[in-house]
Length: 154
Image (cartoon, rainbow, N blue to C red; front, side, top):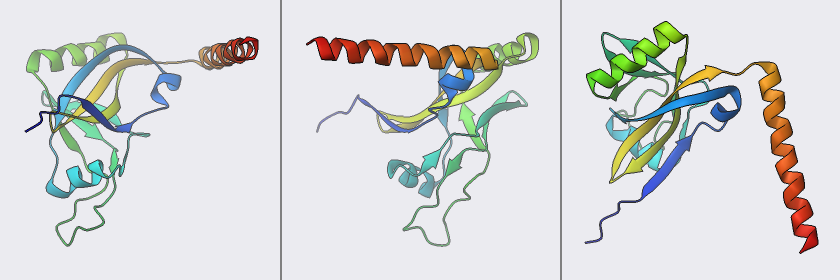
């Protein structure tokens, strides 16, 4: 039997890099119901408005969307429920101190499969101001212009 050690990304938060300055990333496990993993494997999820909260030393993924499984019956899952994230206590405390003391926020970056298990990549991030976003757009346009110029020279 072939072991799959590769990481297969299922859902990503593409706007996170534009709206936030990512300072630190963590890998967490996620508690899913039966039809949720099937729907995720079918690329039926979204993290656009999602965020991470801490309640009683537990991490919770809030406002993430996992579409109902199309072949599910009455046992289908709720689309936008709170989902528990699995992490060590010391790491949770480190994230909690970053949120409380430094005024940072915790956002999910992606949901992926690693060795057949669903994992969530979360990040401690700082919100970007409008001028920072403009700077990011300018840098992106400059790199595209340089690549175009290089392509024309070849």
